[in-house]
Structure formats: structure tokens, C-alpha cells
Amino acid sequence: MRRVVCRQWGEPELLEVVEEDSTPPGPGQVRVAVDAAGVNFVDGLFVAGTYQIKVPPPFTPGSELAGTVVEIGDGVTDLAAGDRVLSSLGLGAWADEVTVDTARLIRVPDGIENTVAAAIVQSYCTAWFTLTRRTSVEPGEVVLVLGAAGGVGLAAIDVARGLGATVIAAASTPDKLADATAQGASAAIAYEDEDLKARAREIGGGGVDVVIDPVGGDHTEAALRALRRGGRLAVIGFAAGIIPRLPANQVLLNNRTVVGVDWGAWAMANGAEQAALLDEVLTAVADGRLHPPEPTRRPLAEAGSVVRDLLDRKVRGKVVLVP
Ligand SMILES: NC(=O)c1ccc[n+]([C@@H]2O[C@H](COP(=O)([O-])OP(=O)(O)OC[C@H]3O[C@@H](n4cnc5c(N)ncnc54)[C@H](OP(=O)(O)O)[C@@H]3O)[C@@H](O)[C@H]2O)c1
Image (cartoon, rainbow, N blue to C red; front, top):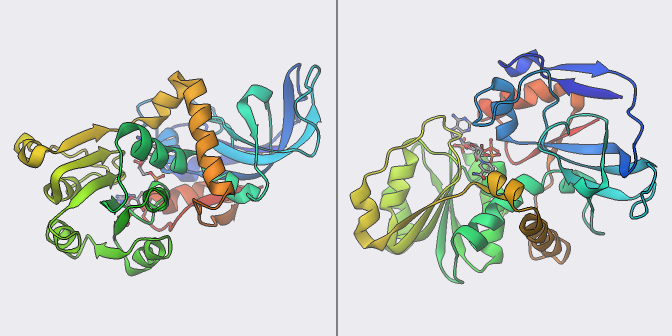
């Protein structure tokens, strides 16, 4: 089997692909041929050693995958060879096969391709968790999504639209804004060139109700100032590399709320609740209420250059590594 290995924290170019023997499944395990493994911004942080959770090398990055069961271990009765499964492993997904406990797998519903399934879990669970568990959005409310053509951004557009909101997308380039509009945003702001606060207020008819912020940097305060009475700012991540400091008076004014979102830690600590949340997401995808975009496919051997592209803001939407 082949897998990507991070032997030392640092630049993504240091990632290697190694070949080794397959691991046969033990009791309660199956071996899965990986059809696609999702790439997320956080994978780059793991490789750099800058994420809040530091994994000592050597390790195989990659938090999510979808594939096909090829071998079952003793005592496995709920899965058989040929079944399509997905997994949110946390680490180890960037490989052409994985051997895992069946408890870590769920079936991919009919109607969802494995390439799409491999790219859903982190981005869609984060967006769904944000808008259904950490805050709420009512039909007719206006949601401003920053980094709108990123993995979390496109998922947030889709989820907000699915919940009946109108979405304003903010991103850096015309191509990215076109992707966000295709995903369902009804207005677009080029936030590196336009006044984010003024434009969001103007388009939102005086302000917006919810801000989804996976980007951070200077855009966060501008977005906070664009919130109308009772507005909510969901702090999801700092892809810009700068953790913003927010003026507390801007939270006080208009009875605004700033909400922290740590889906990963919540999911790890609340397995049953996460399983229910993922089921809600997959059901909504399978019955057509959510529409995850088709990810870009890149070979497993290009893992390092995909991470580099993410860091350089060159990626639109999601990328999956296809062994
Ligand atoms: N809290 C949670 O539970 C949770 C869950 C998942 C992800 N996250 C975090 O959310 C953030 C986004 O994740 P993602 O997977 O959606 O990432 P992504 O697909 O790479 O999207 C991030 C977006 O941020 C924007 N950006 C602005 N400045 C950037 C910079 N200097 N470098 C890179 N991107 C920059 C880019 O859009 P423009 O070029 O249009 O500005 C990019 O599309 C990450 O920080 C991740 O760790 C948090």
C-alpha cells in the first residue's frame, strides 16, 4: 500500500509517499481501499506543527476519506466486501488503503459519490454544527460568509440556503465569488477590494443577521460591525493567519453575540451527538436539501502541492486526493 508521510513538521514539500505492506484487519476491523481522501486547511497546520493539537512525526495526514471495503476481520458482521464507507479518522486518510475498526466507519448513502463523500465531513459538519447547534438562522435572515469559496465557506453557503437564509458571499477573487454564487449566494463582495462593512450593510438592507468567519484577520471586525440588531458572529477559524482582537463595544452595541465554534473538539467529546449530526447532514445531502460541490481530484502523490496551494489561496472549493 502507499501512504503519505510527514517525517518532520514544516513545509508541505517535505511530505513523502512511501510503499509498504498492507495491514490485515484484526478482529472487528476492515481493510478499506480508499477512493478519495479530503484535504482541509487544518491538514496543513498539522504538517506545519502549528495546530493547537501537535502530532509528533512521523504520521500520515488526512482526516477524512471514502472508500470500498476489500477485506473483513473476524467478528465483523455489519460490513462486507464491496460496501462503500466513509470515515472521519482525524489522521491517516492520505493513503490508498486503511485498516480500521468498523466503529469508525459509516456507510455512504446511495446517491452520494465517494469523491463527494470524502470531502463532506469536516466542512459540512462544521457549517451544520455552527448554524444548528452553536447559533441559529431563521428563514429570510441574511448570512454573510467570509472565505466563501473555501471548504467551510461553500458548505456554509449551502447550509444557510438550505435553512432558508439569503447569503452574501465574501472572497478575494472574481473566480471565487463566481463559485460562491454558483453554490447559492445571491450577492458577492470582493473583500480585499471593497469596503466589507459598508457593502454588507448595503446589500443586507441595513445589516446582516449572521456572519460565518473561517478567515479572521481584518475582515472579522468589519463583519462584526456589519451585524444588525441581535446579529451573531460565528468564529470558526483563522485561515488568514491572524487572530483578530475585537472591540467589546461593538459586541455590546445592537445586542450582538460572538459565538465560538470548535466542531472538532465537540465531535471528539460527543461521539453519539456527532453521529446524529453527520446523519442529519448525509440525509440532507441524499434527499437533495444540501448540494456539496464536486471536489477537484488530485493524485495522492501531489498531497504536498495541494497543501501548498491551500496555503497560497489558490484552491477553489475542496480537493480530494485520489490514490
Ligand atoms: N472551528 C472549527 O471547528 C473548524 C472546522 C473546520 C475548519 N476550521 C478552520 O476554518 C478555516 C478554513 O478552513 P477551510 O478548510 O475552509 O480552508 P480553505 O478551504 O483553505 O478556505 C479558507 C479560505 O480562507 C481565505 N483566506 C484568507 N486569507 C488566507 C490566507 N492567508 N491563507 C489561506 N486562506 C486564506 C481563502 O479565501 P479568499 O482567498 O477568498 O480570502 C480561503 O478560501 C481554517 O482555519 C480551519 O482550520 C475550523
